[in-house]
Figure 1 (tube, protein in one colour):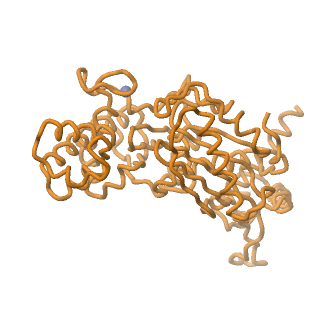
Figure 2 (figure 1 turned 120 degrees about the horizontal axis):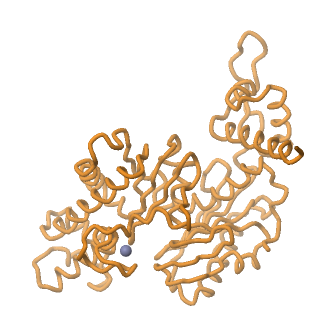
Figure 3 (figure 1 turned 90 degrees about the vertical axis):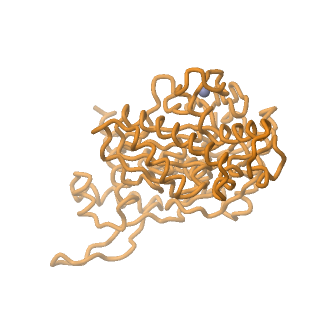
Length: 410
Ligand SMILES: [Zn+2]
């Protein structure tokens, strides 16, 4: 069948490119062994990839008796991708090379999210500025990945629902497609974070992992052998909205007692605010920078470090709920790794260690016994790196075909 032949050729190219990207520098006979293809097929593919400017010979390996074999590697700066993470408080735009290195970064305050059109115009501007200031030619840029919190129709580039931004049906791809003549892909920030950790961060060697975003809210993404587990309607991974207290505090989603309402950065800040308003004696007030109404979890963590009893009580309770929520997740899905990411991770090793202990206390005996718990390696850039990685992944899935990169978005 014609279809099969063409499809197989693309799959073979993808496999070779994947090996060179992840295991390079590597020689052709090792590649052939790993992808289970003949050496002549690998030679033909590597010639094609060399011609398209994606790979090159980086040196010579050890001799096995005969000539020393050529080692192939990716050309890190052959092409670039733009990654944009529109967060609740900050927007980060990066230019990343094929090696996952950030070449240029720009950060601005996200500002008002409504009307959406105004935020998208600011986003267009920051992308233009980032490209211009990086001095990288647009011809070398393969595409733009844009990520936001919320439920995303990634095929059409639409934010279906974002409680954080109070958006419904905002078509990012259509709006930005008018401004840029390179491909644009839209994804949820939680999934982008997971992809970034999988390709360039803490989860490079993992098959089944969950990346949990502990920030103002709590979200997550589930990865299975390099792919997202999206679920039927695309809303999988909503760990922030599992109910842990039947009569607990009201959550942004309208439900009660969700993990997010009990243990997120916002929940921690809200609880501190309540204690202060109730007149409880606490040192938290000494750390507040922008008035009690704008209290941040960071200020509660800072007070806890000085031994403040109320701050420690709030954080210990949050840790207990996190342990329950994450242990449930492990019991259900049996991952090999949990990556903790997001702003709360900055609270430090002591917080992370306590979360780990809390998970262990709640985990079912024998369930997920080998699960590792690690902290993001990409820090606050995880979602932006993941956004750029979406574009890189598309190119690799296409067997390294970069020729259609200036395709106009429809
Ligand atoms: Zn909820």
